[in-house]
Amino acid sequence: MKKQSADSEPLVGSEFPDDAFAEIRALLLARRDLDLDMYKDRCLKRRIATRIRRCGFHEATSYIALLHRSEQEVDSLVEALMIHVSQFFRNPSTFILLEEKILPLLINKLHAFGRSEINIWSVGCAGGEEPYSLALLLDNLDRKGLGVKILATDLSDDIIHQASQGCYEEQRLVEVPPEILARYFVKEDRHYHLAKRIRKMVTFRQHNILGKDLFPACDMIMCRNVMIYFSREEQENVFHRFAKALNSEGYLILGRAETLQGNTRRLFTVESPAERIYRRTLAEAY
Image (tube, rainbow, N blue to C red; front, top):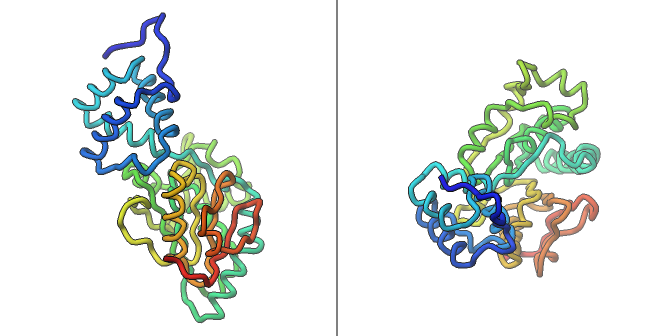
């Protein structure tokens, strides 16, 4: 493997060659059916450059050669491009608002409609911390007899498999209240194992929201820190599809750095501008 020499300059995303990026994009489309055209170039180039440096290269040509001969590195690159670092109850104020207002309102409405189950979709679920956090909240709320069905999706099969195990290092749990930690987790060596009963509330599945697969009907969608990687056109398309997937007056929760784009604003009412929580209106999505 060709290593970086002492006097060479490290490759950075802002200087990533367009021809090399085009070749990597074509390779990932052919090998993994992953179309990078839908994502923001600057984000992808930065992550590719980081991966190249971690492999010990200082230019793209040698790294591309590695991709051609190593299926394992192709998978590692996909992981590097799509992985999202998370933790339980990330941005605690969001989960406080969900616990104290949004989820009780939704539960009351579904109960009034005679529904038997609340359906939530966690998009870009990474290691499972977000959907499991929702499951923990719902386990401690008066659900008025409603069952819970949480679908958690991510692009990576490996991440999905790891998430389904419900096993976490301590740094992922820094926002978990001590009483919740003691009640729902068992510590073994340096890892904490989530109770099986909570894990069973969440179903993990591989899914690409930029693909052609149907979006599941649901009462709430959590899609935090995912849209920032997409072009504005793709963001607007996904928001319209979210609106069609949400049941009447269902909720959409975005990340702190994300907001609705274009005419998708007419499809949602702002419930909390600070927490980026929106409620589906009756306007029709195309």
